Length: 285
Image (cartoon, rainbow, N blue to C red; front, side, top):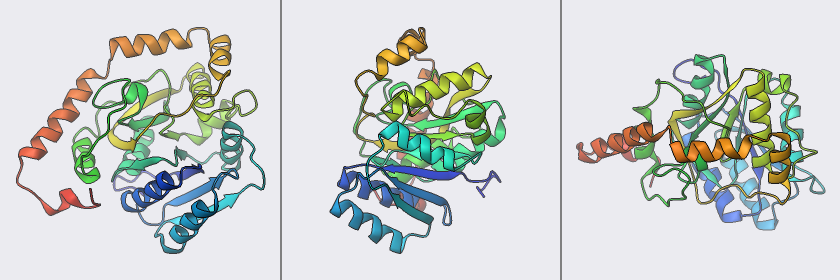
């Protein structure tokens, strides 16, 4: 359970080929996530020998309730995520990219978003490489040297407020409401190859059923790059959802999250001016 009482979801990590990024993701997950959280490391035959060694070492030491599965042959990113989510039934699940690094409190605050508003179908945290939810500047990738715990403490000052609607969830980290996902038919892993496109398609189907995809202002997940598109996915999205590209362009130009970005910047500035506190640095830099 989270501090506010919301049940914590499963964390699904589709394992990638970047071993250094995977190591960083697992270390951050361990530091930032409550002990006992259910974690599924789903490997679509992607991890090499060093990656498998990293996984096994982490599994032997983690405080989380974690498991690793590995396919004998790759199925494809979107199809693999679709299969894993289908296996979770109506459970709420966070899909966390294996090159992302969550900051403290991320999971509890995402869970609280869903608990506070039954219309929310997906909740996405801030990211320094998160497209429409990018901070400090929308649509840009910005390397950050801030201590994760300090960044999390600044985000905590935004928690509990309104969760603004997004045109789509974003693939660095997204909490999916299980019942809404199942009602929408799940992830289309047959039509799309990459997870970001399949997630956009799912978000649009959820919206058609009255579900909202929102930003969770109280949570931040770091990443060095955006999710990779697959050739053909964009054309399929445009054909299936003719207004999709225009809605993204409009959101980027209008930037309705500008005020929230400014609030997060101000919260960090206040922390910089405050006397140092030991808990600001918990979790390392």
